[in-house]
Length: 130
Image 1 (spheres, rainbow, N blue to C red):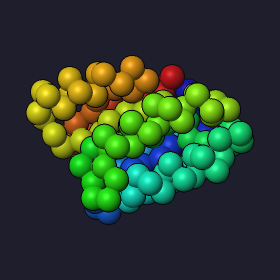
Image 2: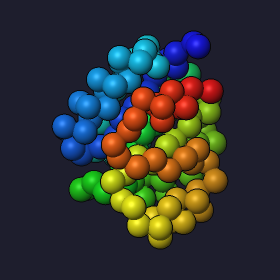
Image 3: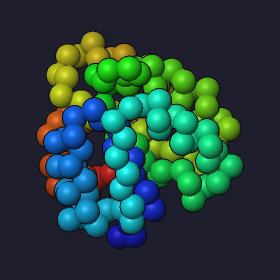
Image 4: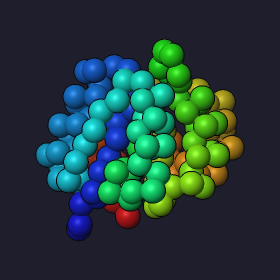
């Protein structure tokens, strides 16, 4: 299996970021893993690199509950921004929430590829490959 070029982890919890990064690197699922604690920083990066496919992630693992800009706000903005991107970016919500209402709300964003609950497992990570 060919690894993805780039994965963004968007989560305000540095411990979760580190664990996810280690798991992704051990499984060699991506050439590059970038971590972000603020969803606004990710949007800024995406806007800056919209025309450059090499600057965009193949996949984003997005936490829902974060301060400043949460995952919901990110999804609302990304819904419009995605049409300006030079390549498709897959988004997986990665959350500790087991609330069925969150899952149903995520389903309203047709561009979200999946709803994953923490903690990740090796099998779930491998299923992220296209």
